[in-house]
Length: 460
Image (cartoon, rainbow, N blue to C red; front, top):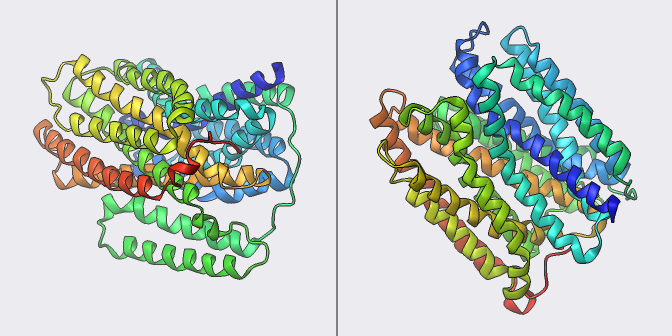
């Protein structure tokens, strides 16, 4: 029991840490722009997104690697590399070095994160696994809030290198804790598929590159269209290779399983909404409401309350009513929260704004455990690392797309020119995200397995 609880705490702290820099880095953008780095607009984009690109593109191969050579070893290597990457970023003398440090941090996160869920499931008794999944998924969402809080507190008193230095001792402590308290999981004979790895990773890189560059370069630019074309060709080639191979890295036929297909879509759609919110939240609170960096970080606190409280109730509700109605209610709550947020302006009192955030967070806490459980339940236990990688990749692609979409809307409204332009773009952006999430909700609910199979809790 003690080892089980220690593993749960350490795995949740790890995903909190890895996710923190995805969202928290946005608060440091003004500091980068004003620093001796002399970073231009494109430089700033890649300081932020080099981490996301490497992280999302490598998650599935990294999950399979952990299944094959040992999840604990891969997790320890990822955490050690994460600490080194943040030290490199903190000491970076120029933009290129900082971007390289950020990309290395994304590689580290891709190694570490899939192993966390796989190790957690191995160390947890079957009857407690749904609750462990619920807490782990809550921490995935809370990571963005923690990142905003940590970044707000650090940047209130120190310059941007301190933000990266903060994570170095955290990584060291996590390495020590994992080495001491987390049991090793059995290795599995996961396939070695170098061709599939190159095709899948290259396809995801190209696709994400197009998504990231879209708002800045324009969605019809040659660079963006070329990235999308390359991504589609490479992913199509991967699909063909995987279907012909006896032991592919990842068998695309798993998407024939309704819960895997619906779970991946639902996870991607929820994080599209959440990270679209993270992208504009700091700008709204600082530039429109006039909050300091520290208060801005604290003001997103209702997300923690909603996710933390509701995720604990999500498992018994899922066991009682089945995943489908719980997922539908959770996704509907996020849609409602986005629509309410689209009505805010400079005169909106903070308690009302907080209530809207709380509604979104409650929706996330309600649906996320069942969505992740649906992905994992469709895969064998020997592929837990790969399943975790698929779940995380869906989340990161959704997050990148959410940021890109709302960033494009803001650019179309010339959001940097005035507060009124920003608010006009904010209104449209939130409604676009709400519309996309509503469409995804219909697809997820329609795809989910029939109610006859819904009564069992999500397990692996």
